[in-house]
Length: 373
Image (cartoon, rainbow, N blue to C red; front, side, top):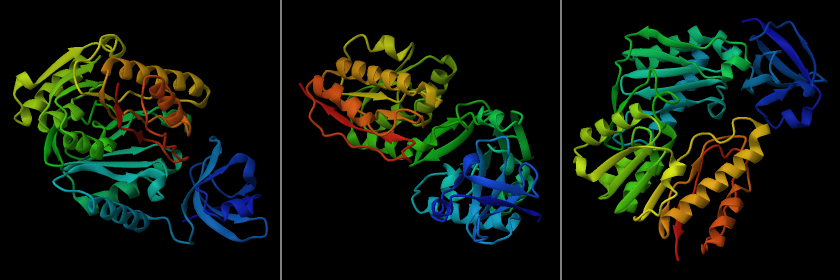
């Protein structure tokens, strides 16, 4: 393994194990090609960590380790096994989950999702993409899947000067719909063309919570393939699913049927959430799980306005009852303070819960609000 050298100026900052090294923090880089491995050292030669380098990115180095260890197939195998063991501790009757969470597992740029007997992967950065074959070998050894499918069709790859790709890397191509189980609930997932890698895996515990709340009548906005709605019905409720995608709503119908839920317990509406919320909802729960509201930092303020408007409309439409999530999974906006924005609007309409602020790492934030009159 050929290793280059990256000398950083801010030793005190990076000795605290910050995962990203930006261009302004670097004094010099030696003996490394784009995507190659570098040892990160201070100006006085102290070893700080090991990562991969991309001169075309504002984040010049993404850290892989804070020890002098070889970055090879065994390295990835060990990391992935540890990540999977951590996830499995919290799973019950579930074969759909995220195995690798990129930076959170010290594998920056790598996403690995399990869908029953198939794995879906994303290599989002140049450095990780260059180590693709080692990682695929490690995944095959650990899981022995029916097939490994790449969803490298995410726009973040364009910023790394990587092509957008989608297809089978190893083994069998997944069927058009893969049947999975989450908390004992069954779903059909389109891993080849669906949102993200096919399913909003990060909402597993929140879907479970909706079932536990046992709502009677639920308006499920931005419903996609019916995940929250299925759980709400299994909790004893009736659900109206609203989405702008006809294909997603048709698959939602199949997911209700798959779980033995009779057709009179749910209804699918092809419409915009904003249009539906103009009328008062005669029920006790609205589920508001919108798409990204701000993909870039420059869109932050506009994202906050959209976020506030959506929640204000939902509160007005609901009257009284529960408003879960609301959720947002956009990193640039809103940041800490969004709870204040949302709850200020709720106070204007007669609410009463104190806001709870999120931290810098709050990518997905959920709030369940009781609305009273």
